[in-house]
Every structure is written in C-alpha cells, then in structure tokens.
Amino acid sequence: MSSHAVVTLSFTRPVYAHELRPGDVFAFPDAPHTPLTVADVKKTVISPELALLALVLPGHTEPVHLPASTPVRPLRMVRTVSLSCLLCRKPQDVKLDLPHDGEPLSLVCGNHVSGTDQTPEAK
Ligand SMILES: [Zn+2]
Image (cartoon, rainbow, N blue to C red):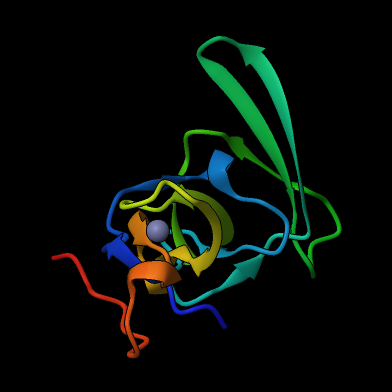
C-alpha cells in the first residue's frame, strides 16, 4: 500500500448506461433494489444523437437493449484513474469504486504524506 492521499468528490452526478463496463453493478431507477451485474456490453451507434447498448446480464437469455443515455444507479464501478501529484506532478494510478469512494479530484503522492494514511474528503 502506498501512502498517497486522494481527494475525492462525492459521486452524485448522474450516470448513464453508456458508462457501464463489464463487472459493474447497477440498478435501474425504477427497480433500485434489483442489482444487476454487467457481463458484457456492446454499443451500436445509430446516429449522432442515438446509440443503443446491448447489455448482457446474468439470468437474462437475451441482451437487454436500451439507449446509451438511459440513467442508471451505479452500485459498483471500479475504475483505475491516473492522476498527477498536485505537488510534484508524478503520475500515479488510483483504483476507486466510484459510488463508494467518490470521484477522484486530486492526489498528493507518498513523498509529501507523512505517517498517517488518511484520505481527506472534499465536501
Ligand atoms: Zn508528489
């Protein structure tokens, strides 16, 4: 474990279906208690305004088709984000589960963090 400190923002922005990737867990807003895990996703661009997604979900024999702009509730979206240290610009990869950890805003690498492994929270 490195002792870098990541400043995150609460992950409150809307998430749309086109952001989903295999391994993500989400729910539809009208069925918030039914978590769905994305097994695979394929995108078909119909026109500049319209793209369709085919989401492969376990337990469904057919892929679920929906517009890429469909709002979804993210439950698990693990992303590796590369951030440059605020102080020395050293790039560092940070792995975050966005709905739980928040969206990364800035990072201070281990060179400037003394002792404690604290993650300050931006409000
Ligand atoms: Zn640094």
